[in-house]
Amino acid sequence: MKIDLEELRAEYARLRRQLARGGWISQGYVQDRGPGAGGPCYQWTRKVKGKTVSVALSKEQFEALQEAIANWRVIQQTLQRMQVISRTVIFGTLPDTRRRKRLTKRVLGLN
Image 1 (cartoon, helix red, strand yellow):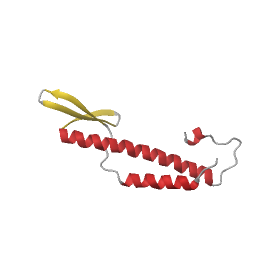
Image 2: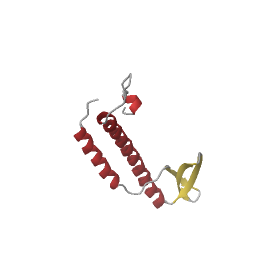
Image 3: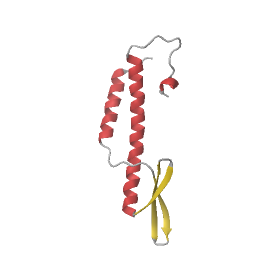
Image 4: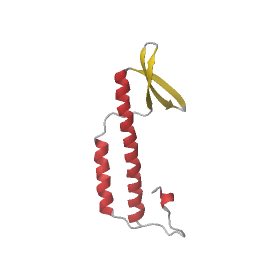
């Protein structure tokens, strides 16, 4: 496995800086359910111990959670990329055990 260690280290450092700039985060989903009986109806939904939990929100809470959820998704994608880089460097630069077959990208989660 031929890797450009310098390039991977630079990308990893960039991703670390990106994580440090993150704002509020939250899991779940928010919905604007349109006008209800008493006015607009905003909702936050998430899973807790396998059960769906929903909470009514104000417009301000809806907007803040919408941004926090978007931040959460970016962080998750960033962490996934950092894992791939980490495994690429670890398996590509450190001494390995003797194997009959080479480890595939799929086995290492590099796809």
